[in-house]
Amino acid sequence: MNDTQTQRCGFVAVVGAPNAGKSTLVNAAVGSKVSIVTHKVQTTRARVRGIAVHGETQIVFVDTPGIFAPRRRLDRAMVAAAWTEAQDADAVMLLIDAQRGITPDVEAIVGKLAAARPKHLFLVLNKIDLVPREKLLDLAARANAALEFDRTFMISASGGDGVQTILDTLTEILPEGPWLFDPEQLSDMPNRLLAAEITREQVFLQLHQELPYAMTVETEAWEDREDGSVKIDQTIYVQRDGQKSIVLGKGGSRIKAIGAAARKELETLLECPVHLFLFVKVRDNWLDDPERYRDWGLDFNA
Image (tube, rainbow, N blue to C red; front, top):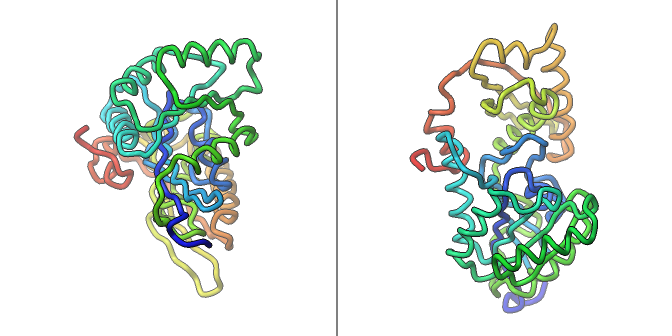
């Protein structure tokens, strides 16, 4: 590595409406899974930082919760966290799902970004492989007419197309300075929280519309064993007894499948054997528990 004078390091906030593909983009940029991805809106709750090294530049991507009109306490806290990250970042990328275009949620985000005016602001149109070129050009023109962007990127985050161009551009505009994280570090999320997120992803993926959004997973115990494996105890919290039976499945079949898929994902991430034990409990007030918000880095009183 060259001397620190040539190094660059900075924070890039990725904002957008729910399900625009923010987590998919961050994972593609980092080259590893640091944020969970499902088709259910508002999957990202906690602030997730994914760390990419591109040449002599360390790029810290901040995957924010989707920005929308909040109704519940958790919604308000997530939206407030997203705007805080955008205000503090060296650069902001507005990600728009090219299939959906400029929705009311996107219009509201554009309005707030116009008022905040970040130092560097980029437009990223995602899922371009699913949209005709004429529609993409029209969408880019309308977005740039509404707000002045430094540059427009057209990408397919799920396939990684266009991501390298984003990285190349960020290396040119982020501030000079020493790296803030170890070169091998991919995220600043503690393993206990990341493991809980991986299991929560599998619950969403396997239960689809059967289980409401109000479900959470907590890592209750973590044991690094002498043989190099890890024993993890987690609890899936739901709000009602009926939801508990949905997670368990007939004869415990559903929770076994969730555990098997989560364990496989965790073994890939942690690069060691994982012994995962899942439990399901009813806790009807978890959405109003300040401790949960602290774990996610959210403001309970937002």
